[in-house]
Figure 1 (spheres, rainbow, N blue to C red):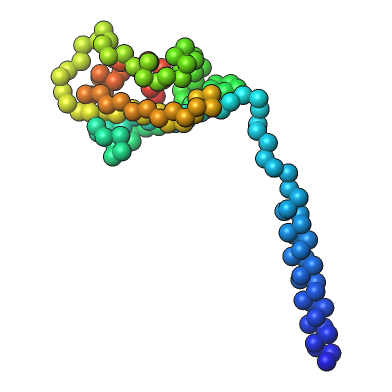
Figure 2: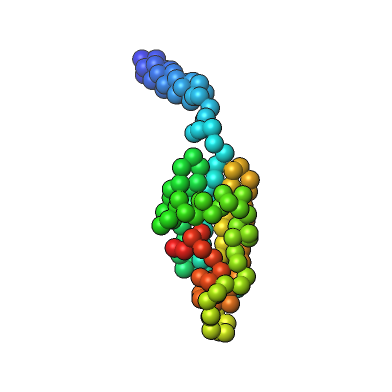
Length: 144
């Protein structure tokens, strides 16, 4: 009988501890947004290949533009300024005819941009015939 009462005491203590932990978790405050600005964060990538689904990514960066420019992009201020001038339309920033002469070699390079611009989803991919054509057609956004 003595062991049964002692066991009941341990069981009651464990139950009380579990209920206290549950009560603490249940009263946690909901997550609040970090600021008043809509998110503007993009993952930019450059890869070898012509199919965005199977491309071998060579390099990628994070570009954050709201509320301030940042991320791992080497020139976030300039890249964000380009995006702002195009209202987040990545396709509008890709020129099809640059002034640089590039070799006519098929070695496809694909650039992608995935994320959110001022609260809107962004999903962009474009394949260039080679790295020279990519560098000739893009400015700061894909210069990393």
